[in-house]
Image (cartoon, rainbow, N blue to C red):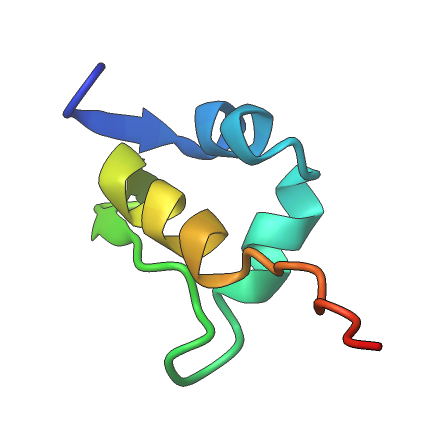
Amino acid sequence: MENGLMTEKDAAAFLKVSLDFLRNDRWRAGEEMIPYSKIGRLVRYRRADLEKFVEARMKTPAICEK
């Protein structure tokens, strides 16, 4: 599964979020949504897309200047 598709459950575990978070995310529109694939009724996520989602949301602390 290293470069393959992940199930909803695997993706939720990877992100450490609930299945409901992922399901609600699919209803959002726009660039904020995590990309996914539908294969019939199955939903699948690519690990690379999940990693990009996390990286895009990384915050760095502001440096305080005196």
